[in-house]
Image (tube, rainbow, N blue to C red; front, side, top):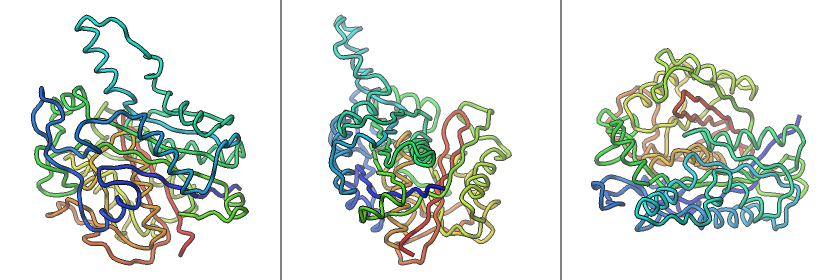
Length: 378
């Protein structure tokens, strides 16, 4: 069986690049601020990369450059597959084009560049790939889907390396208005699993990883962040936005992930929950973690620091989990002050012997995802 490892990571958040974001997360800092991204809409808490919402293409290119540098690889990488997704794609640009169209500007220039798969295509061109190309879109589980699809390409022996990633610029007028209409947006900040949590906070984030079979990584003496052990996805088939009340499909995703990873629940040292700070999500996740893990593993999430980047959130969580495994250091659950649930939350950064970590990701449409990682440091 092919063993899959992560040999490069790049990340961009309101906290900075990978190193800056990781240090800020350890320090319990947050990128969330009260801002007014659009004059037509009220002031809201958001985590942004700049003064105004950014276009995806500029930082997609930068993330690719940084992940290649971190993995110590140079193009062209003809045999490296690409799996890059986004749940919203170029929605901000599309909204702008729509406004111009209704203002009488009927010329929609370069609209083909705004198709959902364009991020993956542009990435393949940038690295000179002539291998497989996938562009998943699975709502807020998109980033985890990218990782899992890349893992499967390597497991099947279709390529020696896969560049996987997800990026999201969710701060658009339509996204903000839509979540506000649903009553899902916070008014002051993101406080996952807190008694006084208000809802989600949108954040601009993206991350990419280089996945590689272990033999290839060892041969070129690559740095290894950790090993991908296994994954699972299930679907509630219940509601467009609310989780299934019994949580059975989500519990099955966790159980299947552990089984495919040859792990027992007691093997898990740390769980990075989806942790959106919404009433239903946090309540459901707390129940699932309690039911599945009687030994009370460490629990901490990162959305209180970075905001919720929708489709990119899963791979961002995975990146922080891998940084944790490599450094053997827990990160705190930023934004948590008065927990509503009896979980073993991490309150401050601390050194800890860690071998296995689990990342959970959930999305509209009843999508439930889980992926397990192993430390090769410990």
